[in-house]
Length: 123
Image (cartoon, rainbow, N blue to C red):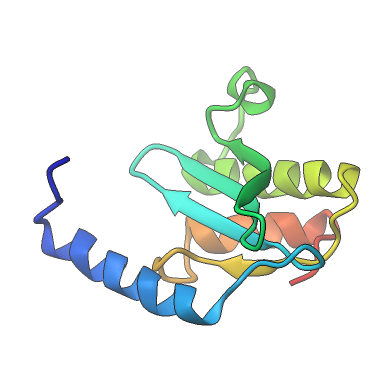
């Protein structure tokens, strides 16, 4: 697999590794991980001790894809945050550790976090 040579991607990957040293998801408090592409946003709740994804959703999941959402990518990110929190609550997860994945806590990443908090997820 060819490595990405884009300096912005390399810098984000270095930030991601630096953050990941400090943030670790457990069974009691799993990690809410965010990935953002130019078009979509993906959120996963991960138990790092077992190495499994407990809950996942994205802007192209079937629950969101059919809906007409006004407000662009930020509104879509907030909807993904709402949905990940609802799925987590259904699995009995109330507290998580937020992993922004090397992205700034701004824009779509912030909207996702606020959407999850709206639905009662604590981090």
